[in-house]
Structures are given as C-alpha cells and as structure tokens.
Amino acid sequence: MISFVLSSALPFAPSGPGRPRPQARCWRPGAVVAAALLAGVALAPAHAQIGSTTPVRIGVVGPFTGPSADFGVPMLNGIKLAVDEINAVGGYLGRPLELVVKDDTANPDQGRKVSQELLAEKVVATIGFCNTGVALKAIDLFQDAKSPLIVPCATGTAVTAKYPAPDSYIFRVQARDAIQAPFLVDDIVKRGWDKVAIFADKTGYGEGGYNDVVAALAAKNLKPVHVARFDLGVKDLTAELTAARNAGANVVYSYTVGPENATIANGKKALNWKVPQVGPWPLSFPFFLEGAKDAAEGALMVQTFIAEPSNERRASFLSGYTRKFQGKVAVPMAAANAYDATYLLMYSFLGIRDGNLSGKAIKESLEGKMKTYYGVVTTYDKPFSAQDKDAITRNMLVMGMVKNGAITFAYPEDAKRNLIIQRKQ
Image 1: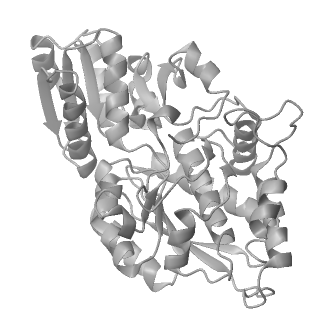
Image 2: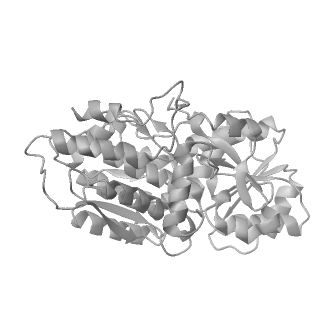
Image 3: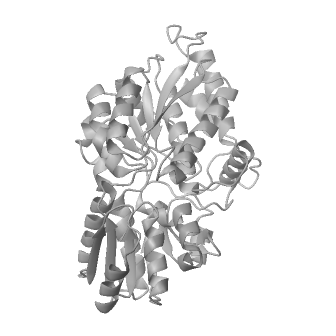
C-alpha cells in the first residue's frame, strides 16, 4: 500500500504535537515525496499509466506583472520550487509535473479569461489567485468544470464560502479574513486600542475585509469610530486621516493590497499622528515596507509564516528558495503557502489508487484520502474535508511586526510557540 510506505518513509515521526524527535537531522520535504513516489511506482496498479512520460499538467494563475506582482511572483516561485523537487525524484509515477502559467495582472476580467484558457488546456488542477476580487470573478469556471482549485494567497472569506462545502472544488491554503480579523481585533483590544479607524479599499478584498473587521469589533461590543473607503491608486488620504484623528481613533486598521498601505502610513507621519497601523498580511509586502520606510516601523499584521528558520523544514525551504531564485523571499507567506499547496496537491495524487487524476478523484483525495504532509507553514493532518475547504485555522496564526524594515514576531512567546508545529483545530 502506498499509504503504508508513505507513513513509514518519514525521516522522523512526530513526538508531541508536530515536534520532531531530537535525532532528526537535515529534514527535506522532497525526501518524503521521493519515498512516496518510489512506493507508488512499485505498487500502483498496472492500469495507472506506469511508464508513461506524459506530463501531468497543473495550472497556475496569479498576478505576475502589474500592481500585485510583489506577492504573485513569490507565490509562483514557491510552486516552482516544489515542482522542481518533485520532478527531481521522478514526478508522479514517472510522469513529470508541468506547470501551465497564466498571468491575471490582478485584473478580474483578465483573471477570468486566463482561467478559461487553463481549463481549455486540460490541466488536472490549478493553484492560484492572490487577489480576492480576481478569484471571485473566476472560481465559477473551476466549479462548473469540476476542476480542483487550491488558493494559496487570496484571503477573502467568500472564496471558499461561495459554494456548499460538500460540492465545492475550491480549496485554500491561507488564513481567510473571517479568522484573521477576529485574531487581530483580539490583539489590539488586549493592547488597549479600542477606538478603531478602518481604512479599506473598494475592491472585493477591501469590501470583504471591512465586513469581517466590523463583525469582529461587534463581537467585542465595539464600532469603528471612523471609516474611510478609497479607490486603488489613491495618492493622498490626508483628509480621511485627519477625520479619523478628530474622531479620536487610537489605531488605524488598513485593508488594502498595494501602495495604499504606504499612503496611509506616510500620511500619518506627515500629520505627526503617532497611532499604530495594523492589518492583514499585505502590511508585510514590499509595497508597504519600501514605500513607507520608517513610517512602517512598528506596524502589526497577521502572519501564517515568518521567514525565520525556526525548524529544519523552514530552514530547508528558505535556503532552497534563496539558492534557486538568487535572493531572499520578497513575501515569505505567499511563497510558503504556495509551496505547501503544491505538495498537498501532489499528496492528493498519491491518494488516488488507480492513477486516474480526474477532478472528482483529486477532490475526494484532498478531502480525506491523503497521508499527513509535514509542511513548511504547518503539519497538514486532514487539512480538508467534505465540510471544510480551508486548511489554515486560527491556532496557526501569529502576529508579525515591522522592525528595522523587516518582518519579525511581535511577541517573544510567538517565536517560542512557532518552534512547535500547530496542527489544524
């Protein structure tokens, strides 16, 4: 059985909640997949296309040029790194994985167009979407085609809520806004910041995030003291920031994906208004860190992955990425989530006994027929089910903070907790 060999081939077994035994050394995610693939080649049924060299085509869609390329490119690179590792040990039953890459330029209409192209090119599944608005414009195509889609970046709650879970072909390896917003609201209330000004763009991402933040505040019997909505590309928010200050805000919660986060930070600095800026993961993007520079210092954001080698899995991933792409990861979360999403898709293939990679078979394997994957972001033990298409749960989140122009842990206890891999709750 493939499942038996995959389990027994792990370089270490868990000791406690995801913690490797002390004797574990030089852990590499590719080693686990290599063992699984060898087992599959030896033991899969004769009609599983063993010996075929026909590539397994996997779609990739995201913003690789344009205003969201700062996290679209790391997403693509994370996928490429995983695929290179998998192909280096034989691919799937001797068949190489082949990426069919489409650039959506962060434009919803373009995203729908290239999604149609991917499906026409007969990919077995797709990994993609960074922008919630782009995803929502296109996911019906994948759902109607019964072609699995794994979303590694887009956080909008609606992405995995649009279709009834048992019927849905839309999966996600990212923290949806419905858990990010309460997590961050809990943190700012604990810090004593209870007069919240919300600055949200008018995209699908900003709209969904705004609603999730308002709901999270309401759960604490709070309402925002000021709300500012703006279009992408805005260069000056002085009037809105002045109104928020006059309303008594003691924290600014920003929900936007691009340079507008820096516009908010720089506007606060120009007004000499020294209140903290908090938000979801785009506050870890280069557009913010480089666009706001010292005005970004101390900003807080929700993270699933911080680029510190807290265990051997993460150290291996970071060193592998640096070697392959000749530099540090611009947006570590995007790369790590996409890397794990690629391995989860590969593990779903290994759970299909007859080698028939139909959309239905991949969906059912993702929902419960896979072995545990010891990933970079977390350990994925039954990450999906027929009732749940989101792999990331609240216990996996940490607070990140801008310090000296980089992202680190906001709390020392989070850095310590991060040494122990959190499993899904």
